[in-house]
Image 1 (cartoon, rainbow, N blue to C red):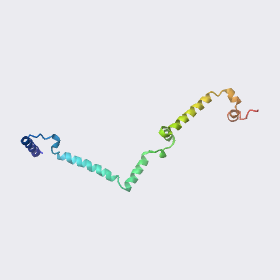
Image 2 (image 1 turned 45 degrees about the vertical axis):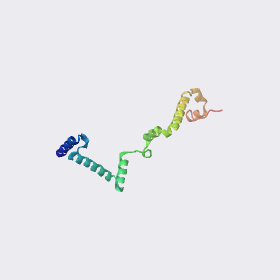
Image 3 (image 1 turned 180 degrees about the vertical axis):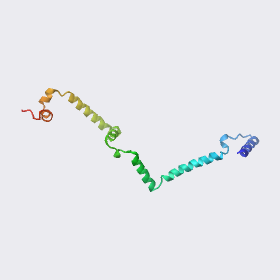
Image 4 (image 1 turned 60 degrees about the horizontal axis):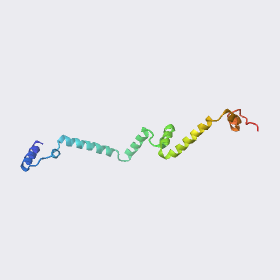
Length: 131
């Protein structure tokens, strides 16, 4: 590196040219480190190729937990479906019906319950009101 910088300085003085800093030769350790990193990257890519590597990657994905809706169950699946943009119109409809049902139930008075054959049969005394 010392000989090269001396040559660069001499050439720069002779031809009145300034040599930019990035044009100098890189250090041996720097080049070696670069190629070591590239070799590690290549080895990691090579390790992911082939049938055995695909099987191992598939098993690892299964072990890490559910990632797709097909593998979800219970509340995570329900929350996933609620958040999905394709289900938005359905969810607005579901919300409207649910709120309407709650509203109607709050307005259902004791007098209405007494006059309702359905209520008396399934929630009241168990006998429909005589006509």
